[in-house]
Length: 147
Ligand code: FES
Image 1 (tube, protein in one colour):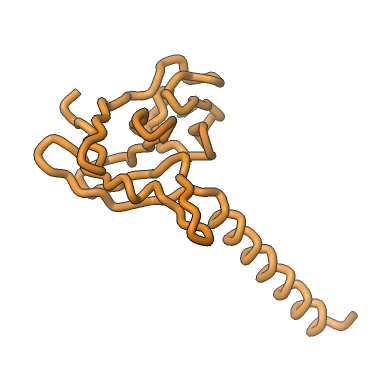
Image 2 (cartoon, helix red, strand yellow):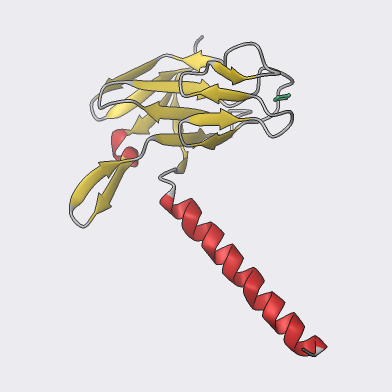
């Protein structure tokens, strides 16, 4: 194989890998949204959890909420129509931002893991994540930032 063919083949392989990665990401059921803060609450419309597939309604397991007033995002996990958890995505070991993978949060710095209620599943972190009270009413979630 000559140099030109080799570069072309590698380029196509790289593009295919990137496209596959994006496809996997879109299938993971996660969503990042810019949420509104009203007073001391973050407001999240419940419809943001909805996924419409061929006229069937399904629900995302979690959302990641961002707002310019928040230093770190907030992870909201949906256990049921009425039960949610809201977790600050700051690692309790040394403060690095966590990454959401389905029902767990992982720290890329030293490998700590937390479950969808903020409990430590893997050290070196030893303290649970900061949580926020969540109220579901009028087709929206109110996440209190007071605590
Ligand atoms: S900062 Fe997260 S595990 Fe160390």
